[in-house]
Image 1 (spheres, rainbow, N blue to C red):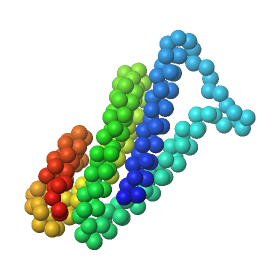
Image 2: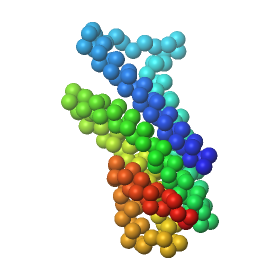
Image 3: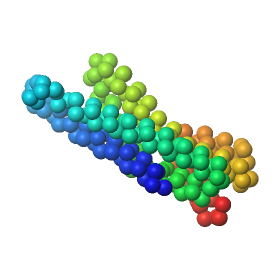
Image 4: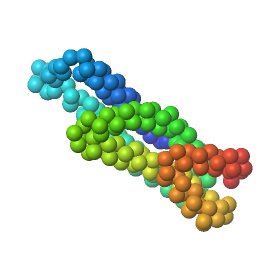
Amino acid sequence: MKKVNILLGILYTNTLLLVIIFIAFISTLISTLISKIEPVATNNNGLSDSWLPIIFFGVWFFSYILFSIINIVSLFIDYKNNNIKLLFKKMKRIKLGLIPFWIINFICYLPISIFLIVVGHGFGFIIVPIFIFASYTILCLTSMFSVVYFKSLHKNGIITFKQGIIHSLLQFIFVIDIIDTIYIIRKWGKQDV
């Protein structure tokens, strides 16, 4: 469970960066409306301060990839050991634990995306698909927790192959995945699987 908690922490660190970028975006938008944009300040090394978010993102991205791989390997080890209870706990923790993450991301990404598409002079059509791709990549990773759990349920004869496929597909659709997860938790959360 510790690995899942670390992965949640890494994803919420991304959300913190996104909120900082969102606040900077809003303040830049307001300052642009009030006066001209000042040139980017440089420090004594001549390195632009705008590199800091890129460096932070690089460290975050490396950590995210590392702990994603560690968690996926752990999931398959739990599946091989037929540890349904632990798979259930991990699925529940990651899917429900990220509800605030998705809400915050949606609140931040939507205005930025609309602004970039409307006034970005083509730039928005490059950045917005990157936002969507990044969000979907995170959804796919978190859905792996559910898919492995469904596979384990099928392996133990608790659900049919068709039920496993339907629930697995629902896990890859935004918002529907949370509704399906809540359904699964209510249906199999109380029984001793």
